[in-house]
Image (cartoon, rainbow, N blue to C red; front, side):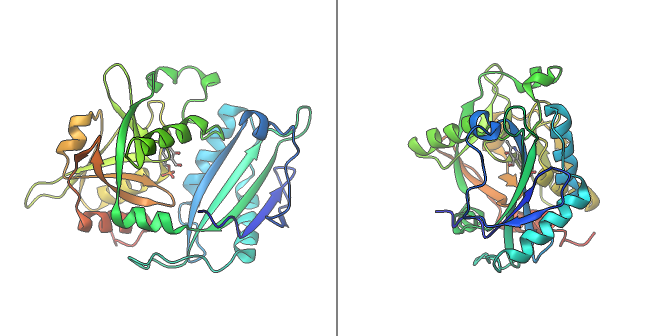
Length: 304
Ligand code: PLP
């Protein structure tokens, strides 16, 4: 169960100034288009010991989402001010019992188109990282491969389909996770229907590793510009891996590649690098030492 946000900050108008609000108080009008149509965009950030270490990457993606969705994005300084206010008002954060990385918060920044005829507005919530997240990091997750019905690479010339935009409309992603859970798995990896190419998780990117003795590992992920959400975690892991002399490669990946990989992860901002333990019931190799290194890459703790 989620413990709910410990703090909330309102940006109305979107350009600020940010105003702390009580997260338990109602804040949304019933005709708001975020509520009635999922018409808005968001970012989820991981905060460690008070620092949103991927802030710039999240702000850049929020700005790109806003451009495509024809919404305003709160400027960087306003987002930073809202984040500081939210963290001031939030509780002390939570600690991962399996590897104490520091005090962790999950921050969600959302922009709504607002009520019809009204102005867009934004809000930020700060929550402790829930225990299920820590369990997933430690125990990994089993995934079901689910077809997404069409190839999102085909959407790239069609801005009205909002390719690569982190919209508030996650009903399909959540339905896919429910379907996976009803069928004995814990999470989802989407594939294309035509050539069964691996795309992404419901709320994560897919990364796999190939290792050979005496050689640095090679990390592989599906090409992030082909209609899937470009993951800030995957990008940061790949940047660090490149600096450490590892190989990095961009798909295409197929189900067989996951089954034959030396390790597979779902990467995302708050869950970090979650090992995949099974794909459609088939066991997948995992490598706890590599998982720790990927986590260090993400948190900027691996030196260079
Ligand atoms: N893909 C999807 C569909 C997502 O929802 C997310 C995160 O929520 C990601 C990938 C991973 O993105 P990030 O690493 O920036 O959190």
